[in-house]
Image (cartoon, rainbow, N blue to C red; front, side, top):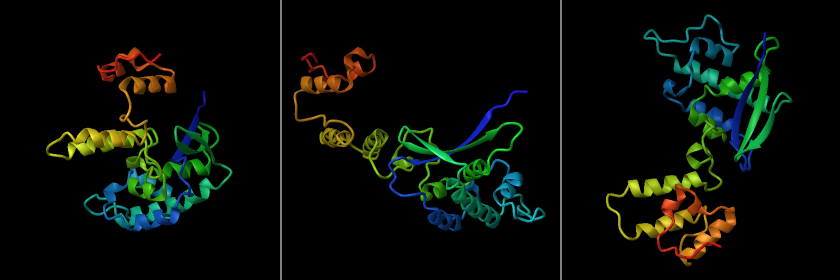
Length: 232
């Protein structure tokens, strides 16, 4: 019978200067007013995994079938306690990938049980996304690092695209001034696209990346027609 490794992971931005703030997470749990914000798939099982000290006979649902908010908050608070201990244990390590510091723990799919730290990390993902963000975690590190995904210390390419989309989408009318603020916004993550000859900007891009954008069938459509100067 084959075995596989089961890996549990949770991430923070790699450039975050502070450790995860578990106290803020506990406070955020207390401020939750909607039980639907929890990410349970099977609360009948997961509530008791998060709060093993809970009486097995406890009524966790209202008569109408809704999960009790007080029970969910109790389990969430316990999950934060266990996560704090797990991330400081020898059962957890971390790697830095694509701007994320990813905490990892694991176990075998059959035979040995996963580590307690792995269980703690898996259970943390049942918490509301707002609670994970309050502690400094990124709810979904499969997405590019950005302010909407928990990164507040730097401006990323994704943030610039979001800013341009919001800046244009939330204005009823556009004016000639739009190009100036778009250039200024892009200048936060790229050399500012203004104040130099178009050919020089093309040349700088090519030298910086060892890649000529006119060789790409997507980027070539955006290289200005006034760029008559070769990048060589």
